[in-house]
Image (cartoon, rainbow, N blue to C red):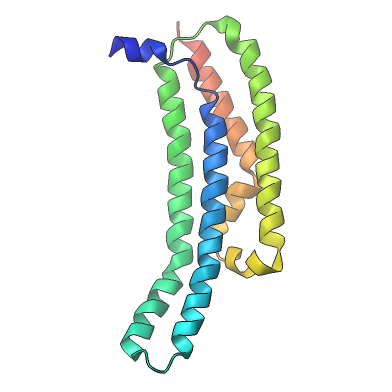
Length: 163
């Protein structure tokens, strides 16, 4: 166990992975909403499908937005807190703080790109209606660089304040 704890060399890079994951997750959810909309429309128009089946699909369709919006919020905050907690178990020297500042700057730039990619995709008319129901996801993705900066500062404090 002690060997595993010492072999962990980085924690700041985990914040890059959070940015990649939340971008991919949000895009998959929005594309899934678009596909689900098409399926629901076809189901509702098909006269051979029973009304009970249509009602079940409509109920699931209506809860899709709130379900995945809350899942996104839970996963985003959970991953951020997991990185902060895991930073506590990493031994680091304060000399590496300056390297961390450079990595934080790059991280901020990259997450700003992720945020812009997301915004460009949801502004496309194909995905605009699908994305309109996700309030938390749209907020977190619009301010992704800010949230990553906050997590980065907390990680830096946890990494470099213990001795």
